[in-house]
Length: 388
Image 1 (cartoon, rainbow, N blue to C red):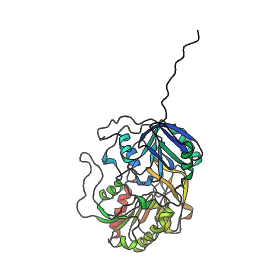
Image 2 (image 1 turned 120 degrees about the horizontal axis):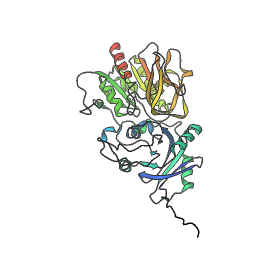
Image 3 (image 1 turned 45 degrees about the vertical axis):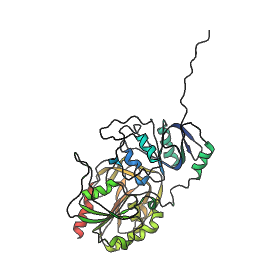
Image 4 (image 1 turned 90 degrees about the vertical axis):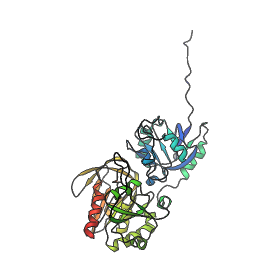
């Protein structure tokens, strides 16, 4: 008699990720139902998926997490970096599990469904990450359908039609609608977030896509923070008589946002007050000083990026999220490179030689990430105290 055979039922895919070159990845969908298109990047952080999803710097992007355990600590409103997720969707190795954490107030899958964001699990994220590194950040389309019905030709066409981030000003889409003050400080055991009291250094933070924890870090360092929209002019900034100006992180092409932000920054520089920029703010400060920015192959996204401080020789482990970088070869006289990436040697910091003006490419507020770079907020405060 022939050997008995058994049929193994394979679950039908409920999500599909289509790359512009026609490569397809099938998996299990979660979160919102539907489809979207974006640039695909990968993030190597082991923690902080909720903070990453709500980081405005991820506008126009879908995030592949290289760490497989995504969703296991659930979600909590305390960890939102802005009111709603900004990343278009996420790609993960394993389907999110039931949360197990004392701070959790919800499930990642439900959170994404309510917030209208698509996720796909069961993907070979190592293969996908290799493709991103080798080919550059691809344009993709992602679809979630519980019935598993996908129009592949349409998905590939959407991926190919996505215009990409070059030349795209996304800061206007994520900035605040009007100015506001901020006094909430960083989370601390056992009371959580507290409010700053007493008189501090008056700082105008220009919001190109600022994360809440960056504003909290300014408040914790002793700043009275006034947040202005990305489109604020130099006159509008200076009308608040600030002791210092902070240029926030944000998404998109710095050259596109710089069309209106660079004139504002030049006006601030002419006023001679301290300036501190990070991420997109760093790139636009460089543009205002006369340097150029360029699109990277796949960018830097993670909470474990080693950066060398050229002034001290120290190495910081930093949190990064950027797809553009400052071309250090174009820095003008009077501006020096202060930090470099130990991954690829790209620029990670600059300062003016004769003024209290400096910036870094990474996110020193560590949400998520290490605390190595918090000293930069203190350096900014010291610059304001010296300049007053």
